[in-house]
Amino acid sequence: MQIPKYAQHVPRSSLVRIVCRGACQVVRYAEVSKTPWSSAGPNMDMELSARCLVCGYTADDNYNWMRL
Image (cartoon, rainbow, N blue to C red; front, side, top):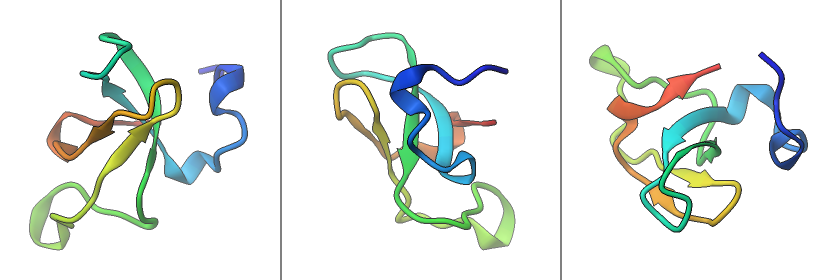
């Protein structure tokens, strides 16, 4: 999967795809607040967030994120 220019400056381990509910209103690449991170099981980090790299919207619903 090719990464768009707006997301190429972020390390791949920190990139996720989110449904941006900010100004974009589409699926966008976002940067996770901490790495390494776990979004499932006993190691799930409830303090994670992901910031849209286009509009800056912050998503806290890590169950809706798609890893690359």
